[in-house]
Length: 256
Image (cartoon, rainbow, N blue to C red; front, top):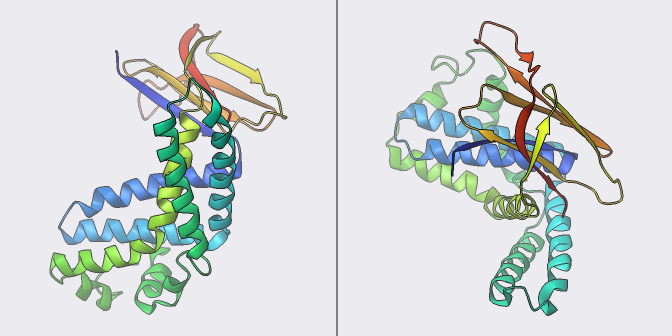
């Protein structure tokens, strides 16, 4: 099977926030694997972005609602003879555990980190270009020069606040992506558009094209319709232009 590049577009604000958090969780995990002060800087920057997203909305209730909705939908499949009951039972148990753990979590996720003076000082300076220089934040500089084991311990403690909800978001996105298969389509003149049924809400659009394609996909859309344009950018110094040729691609509309 040839390598594919997948482009995703969320079609509601909930999935949009989940995808951004997934990206940040993946980014912080990558940098945690490193042991240099620069890796710790990058990990902390991702942590601050995660805190900012959780500070703007009540994502805990959003995740719980989605998990409960998926649990109810999947529970209806238990009597279907074509379903792997052992796998379904394992999935339902995992979702019930996550829901119980979120219910047991008092208050907004990560709220106690807002009162952490060390993190607050870094967050305030992070909006200034170059504001995290050593001379601007000597306490941060001191922390970065501590042994890696100490920095990792602190980062793990801060990130632990988001562990349960992070696992919930990953599971929701896994179910969303797996809710439909890819199907072959052709974008005539580099453009494709589809009208959606608002009574059967599509959560996300996924477009797959070969890794060696000359084009990239630009997706836009909302509850009622979405469109895909295939663009070519000869170089990073030139403006991308839409293809005039027909472009074959694979499409998955994630309805769950």
